[in-house]
Image (cartoon, rainbow, N blue to C red; front, side):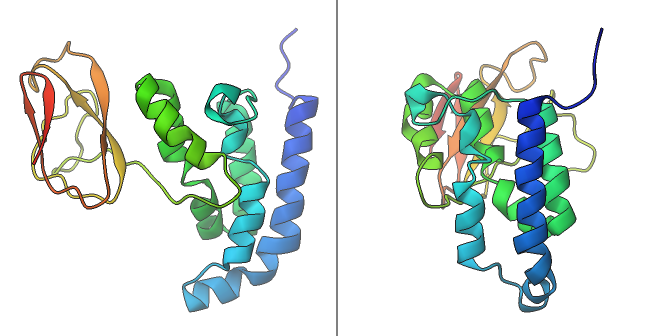
Length: 189
């Protein structure tokens, strides 16, 4: 029989996230909003809970737990009760780490995933954008003048117009100003 009830492990994680949201986040969310800052100690405490690193395999420095969209949603929901903006700040590195884990090269995984398994919070994020409203992520066209902080951009490798070409992640470093695709290779300008 199919059950939609959280597993025992999920219940434990949800309980931990709920306790943190109640005891730590709820008490200071208004002050954070008014001042436009989030205390570093709060972020460090949340980071040490391992909400991002728990799904990273041992070979890349993580504990090797199961990665589950359901568990991630349950965590996000409980933390967001404490405060949505703090939650987004705490969970944002997963937007970078999980695509690297899922679609990055082995070299990228070995280089970047250990950064999210350390003791200190590592700020990172990902974005998938085009310069027009309502774009289709499976029909990306932008390949030049990418301005970003740090992102994993999914783009077509061989022909930007070829709809059957597989998407491949390209990692752009902080301060990177330009990217051109020439014959399926990345050219950093």
